Length: 313
Image (cartoon, rainbow, N blue to C red; front, side, top):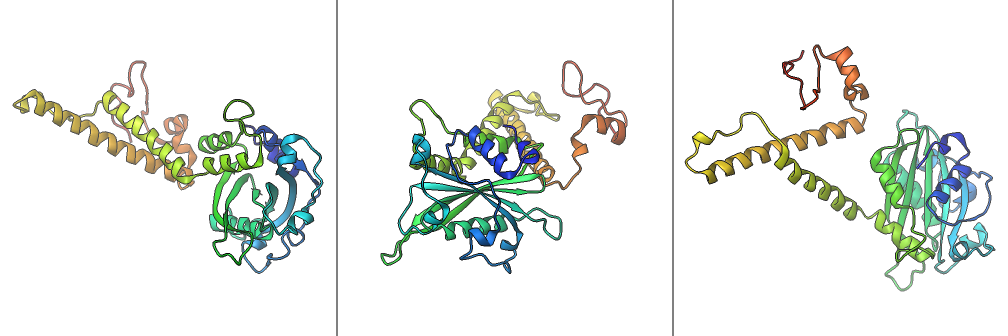
């Protein structure tokens, strides 16, 4: 998925192309930008630090049954806002954010607060947002829950799902994977041909427990594969054990413990790398060889480490 369009085109045109790639039909409304107070006038408060980050708002359009059937859309944003019953549709907005005074990206809580702002404004209609800030974008979606109280109408905003800090030029593989999963099937048993199916499908994609389960399943599979393949120094010596069974158990434990240590260290290093707490160059072989370590020869044709180069400065 090419995200560079978010750099080369207006946010409206970029979103238009983005949702086309996701196979999501949209009844477009207008490409003209608007001020936040014109779109979310009821609850917008410039004194709110999160609200104050909003620079410009684009209303891309609606995803409703007419969009899926190809019928002409007759609803306007004002008419949807005035509804007093649940609307089977999705409103899609683009939000360009101002730079924070400290130069940092918006926090998760700030993006979630803005997402709730739009969902409160359109109380009967789910809302999806695309944020753009600097060279990054974020995708926000929220659950809509029925009020339990009989005397309260409409829906309340549930859990906000965020895919944030997506680098436009160098998107993370994990970000791209989730964005690809947002692409809806157009044929077959899993075909998405209505708003309700789309809504349910996206909620599953953003389900944190499912994402976590996939992540840990992948780690588990890698662990069981690695234990069979790896070799570590200081392995138990067969002559130190009375039986083959006790030796095999000690050898398996040795490998298992070391794989777990290796795995936790890799995850920690990857975490601090992704948080930009250490220079990207530390993961560049050429940079390490020429600028950092003396006699650094990491590979040989038939193994992992070069013979005779076990030590480095």
